[in-house]
Image 1 (cartoon, helix red, strand yellow):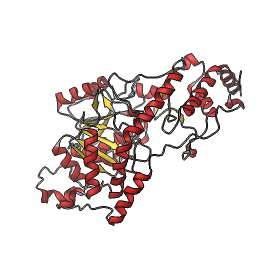
Image 2 (spheres, protein in one colour):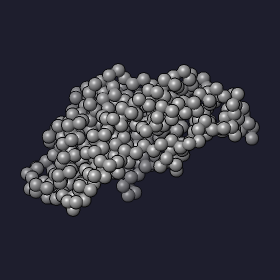
Image 3 (cartoon, protein in one colour):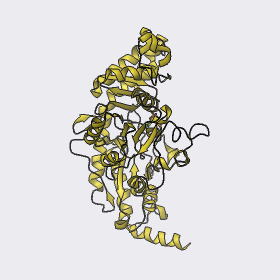
Image 4 (cartoon, protein in one colour):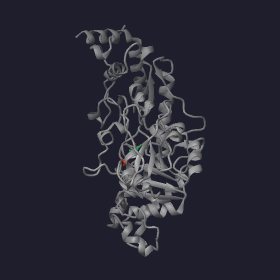
Length: 442
Ligand SMILES: *Cc1c(COP(=O)(O)O)cnc(C)c1O
């Protein structure tokens, strides 16, 4: 019997894991090329040929559209901006409801509020953590205008039933693709299954430009509306002859030429970076499959899950200890990751508290001291963002374990160390049961 590191025994590994670093010589050359032109952004916020940006932005958009199989791609300065632009383009406004997920980054649910609409939370499927179509159906009302579906962790939501529901009622579906570049649902590219897809290029995503995002669509009218909202819409619409003025409050969501040039390099590298990640996931799963306390979800047939994070469900009954102590013990066995030392070992007990439990929703106070957009003469519905609203989302956070120890350039030997840590904890669960008893008594 070996002593667990948590109890003072030797760590499985002390040498740091390698950093996930996608920026290299290609990006450096691309940045130099832009620097040599002296033009770091060519946008004009007016009805003019430069309304659609400079050469790098346009080339990046063409590359992105081709790679993702979309007719239109619009570069923006973040996925958050992209979600706001997509909601605006959909014509969502005060009095409308938008179905959202409680299990994501906050902006996936708050984007509709900027246009005065109310988020209505549907529950998630406990095995994919994506929106459950049956729960969406149960929460539709005559006020529902759109649905924001998040392909969380790199796995596609069940889009066919979502699109059927939307089609019956004329709803706009926005796919939040921030965690699923190059992903597929039943063989089809995500970002083109709904009416608009929104991708992120922030530093933490599969590929990045520091900050950035892209909106994809096959609909020319939506593409034009996104382009307007991105670039000072109200200053431009008259010159362009756009007459449906709703939601044409303009923003500056524009991406610069340097980010676009970097984005073209990153886009080209994306597929091989993802294949390397998938190889590591397969290696790790092969080694962890026998552990009864870890449930490893199997992706839907025909899907391409791109593993933004790798997630398990923890069976506390089979382990005989609680999830948090198990994760504490696994983390104690493993080293930090280069470049992210401040975040600790990249294994986490839990993902997010359901978004509706945040104070803004609980108190229904957002803009100033008023209850707009949650309550008021503009809105005929009433939301109650109480605990218990989405039981699966609330339960999910109690049994999920996520980690990022599968990103390239992690090697087979690195992956073996990760697996060894889990196995060591598994083989010594009795030490943790003793520890739990001691802690309880103290
Ligand atoms: C990262 C992320 C976003 C926001 O992306 P930014 O580019 O940082 O604005 C939105 N949705 C999900 C699911 C994300 O993971």
